[in-house]
Structures are given as C-alpha cells and as structure tokens.
Image (cartoon, rainbow, N blue to C red; front, side):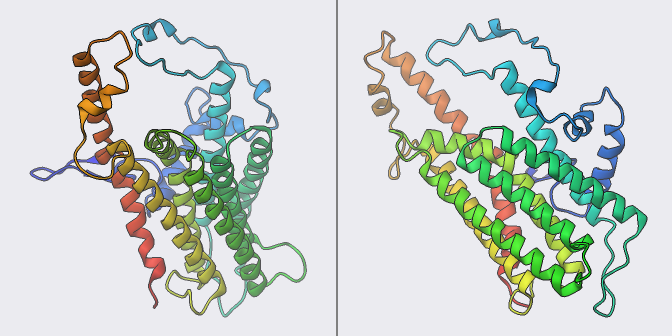
Length: 351
C-alpha cells in the first residue's frame, strides 16, 4: 500500500490501510475478516470453505469464465495462464494461509501473561480460538501434502505451519500432566529451531533454483516478486505474532542471551533477514539484467534478437519498455523487503 501525505513523497509500507503487517492493527483487522467470512457471498468465505472437511481440490465446484481472446495481442512473448484446476488450487492455498494468519492473530490476542511462573488459566475464548487454529492447521497440513510445490514454496509453507504449532503449544501446552511453563518454552523452542532450518532450506533453494538458467536475473527477480505476497509477508506476520506472544510470556526479543525461546526466535529472525537480503540482491540483478557494471546497453541486448524478422528499432523500443517496467519494481517490491529487514534488526540487539 502506498501511503500519501500532503506535501511529502508517498511512502510505501506494509499494512498502511488494510491487511496484516505484524502491527497492533492486526487483531482488529483479523476480527473484522472473521465477521466478513460469515457472509457466504463475500470473498473471505473461502477461508471457512478451505478449513472444512473437504480438502481435495477436486471436491470444489468452480467455473472458468476467463476470456482468453484478450491475449491475442501477445506476439513476442506468450504469457502462461493457469488451468482451471491450478486456479482452484491457488485460491485454496491462499485461503488456508490466510486462515492460519487470521486464527493465529486472534488466538494470541486473547493470551494472558503467566503470573509468578505459573501457567495462565485458559479462558473460554482462548480455548475456542486455539481449537480453531489447531483445526485450521491440521487442514492446512493435509492440503500441503496433497499439492505439489517446489522446494522454496514447500519450505516456507512448512515454516508458517511450524510457527502456528509454536503459538498453540505456548498458549495451550501439550495437555498432559507434565505441562508447565518451562516445558512449553522447551517445546516451543524446538518448533522455532526446526522453523529456522526450513528458512535456511528455502534460502538455499531460492539461490539455486535458477542457477542453471542462462539469464539468472529474470527467473530470480520474477520468483522474488511472486514469493513476496505468497509466502514472505505471511511468514513475517506470523514471526511478529509469535514474537509478541513470546514477549508476553517473558521471552522478549532482547533476551536472546538469557532465554532459550528468545535465542531461538532471534536466530530464526536473522535467518529470515538473510533471505530478505538475498531477495533484494535478486531484485537488483533483475533490474540490471544481470549486468553488474556500467549502464544498460540497449543496443547490445537487442543483438540477441537480431535473428527475428523484426526491425532493430522495434526491438530496442520493446527492450526500453521492459527496462522501464523492471525499474518500477524498485518502488513496488523493494520497500516492503527493506521494511521487514529493518524491523528484524531489533532481534540482534541485547537488552
């Protein structure tokens, strides 16, 4: 969202007006989404549909009313369009993830701080919201196993699920007789540690997935643009939500040297910070077409297309348009990555 202030340059930041962004506004927005989701004909109703008993993509009825004739103008490059089944799969994936975000935020919003080292007594509202999160998490895991994705998507999807597991265990515990504050911290720490390994796997997969391409800048830049809304922002929101819950239980961001849970969460945040740095570098290469030094030479880029039965001037005009469109990503993608990076710097500070 671009926030405009009178007499000042527009600011681009997460959640300026709507959506989840890891801020104090998330709870009110999540509760409003829950209200809107009850209306069957509202788009948020798919959040409920995804969490119901039907988990298979084939169980959902849909119709494809797209007009593909609008793509007839495509000459030099043909865009790839999702099939009807792929569209349903993508809609359900987003619904599952949005459902996890909504329920995790609402559950942590009812959490009570422990007193004198004792586990807080669960309220009826807390129990209900945690049960809803558990159910949604179970369905999301089933859906994730059914749908095939690449290594980056899989790692980030599992990482989001792991943080939800940590939230549930901190708020409700294991449910056995050995349940205690120390036991909850220990279990939550193990979930956070495994999440860090998933983020490291995602980072490795991101840098290696396009290494075999001739022009690495294009696939990596496009992948970064896709990952930002699909997985990176949702994970960041869950990370900040988990951090707030940990802080409530006495495992704040700046206690990484004294509290095991705080240390694990700080390591996770710094690993995610490194992934964001990789994405920023990918976007920089994307805008430079992989050329690290000197200005862009449009003429040299046009030489590779000289075999086409198209005039050189036309090719150069097309390249200039592509260069201009990629340059727009500096305002449309980078600010969000920078904002998340800067907010994670606090995890590296000591109290």
